[in-house]
Length: 97
Image (tube, rainbow, N blue to C red):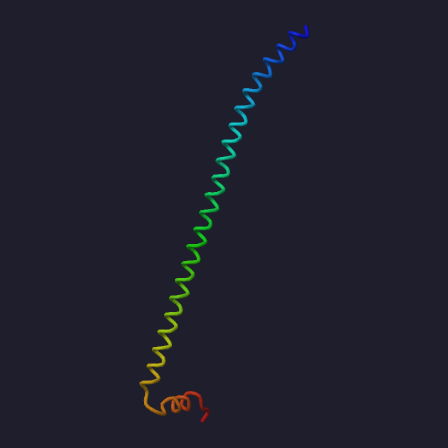
């Protein structure tokens, strides 16, 4: 009786051992896919952040260039006016008389 039980347990353990190996292999494959997806997602997020930073830098540079151009236009406009024009315009536009 004991020998039959031992034989049956030995066969059962052989079957369970095979299924356990398959289950561990499947778990390892799922884990590998999960970790690969996380790594790719992190890399994508970093690339997106770098692209966003580059776009912001370009926009800031364009705004600086535009502000410089506007300043140059105002300075050229003022330089092209006759002497005393600014004082006269202030007097005409802002005085209460």
